Length: 279
Ligand code: A2P
Image 1 (spheres, helix red, strand yellow):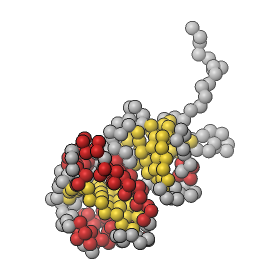
Image 2 (spheres, protein in one colour):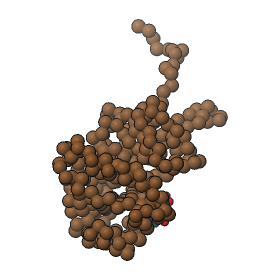
Image 3 (spheres, rainbow, N blue to C red):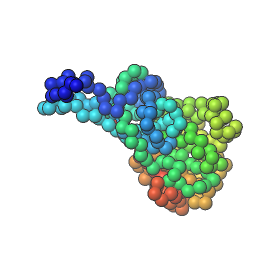
Image 4 (cartoon, rainbow, N blue to C red):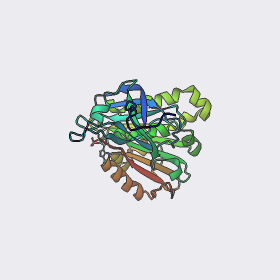
């Protein structure tokens, strides 16, 4: 037997919790999505997030490298073989300034500990679910829109997405289009499941078919008139919110005015909120 000694050759350093990038798509100069391999043991609920990142620069004094991690909503559904993420590119963001350059074959760090509040378990049964997103806050809904439970639990699924510019809607628009055309999903989820989806994209700083912040369109009643539905009420409506902080706070206050109560994993209720994390 060979004794293990201090002088034994060290294995080549590898990233902790490394996963391999399989696909990258740049949607605009500020947005990209990518897919990575999924750890075999990783179980998560659609809508949850994990910490992902890259190894940071060496510490100038010690030369040691620490992982640079950020919270990212998993954009793929829980049954998917791979994991998908949707990210902003912040020019001087410590992580995204580098992450935006990943290519298939590269490795990223992924801590396999999913958490989050945007899960079906945090809501009590209802008739209609509203997914309210701004910017990259669309990501958890990209997961939930591909989860069969969304269609088992609700008669109607309304997804609103507010972005500054029309190009920023592309990831969501294309995803919804692909869900509607997906014959495998139709077979799995039941024929006609996609007819439950009502997609309501809006822009605030560039011309598009529907302009304005979703909050303003709710206050004016325009969104209800456009969709032909009643304003939200605690009996019928459930909601999930994911966007920038100001949006989350404003919409949360509005939902409370409509009489909806915030839920949690431990105490399911009528709506839940999560921040779209920025670099
Ligand atoms: P606006 O252009 O009027 O600020 P950001 O890129 O800054 O995260 O914003 C994403 C989208 O969210 C933008 O269209 C922005 O509109 C909108 N937004 C920002 N704050 C709010 C808010 N408090 N309520 C509703 N929408 C908001």
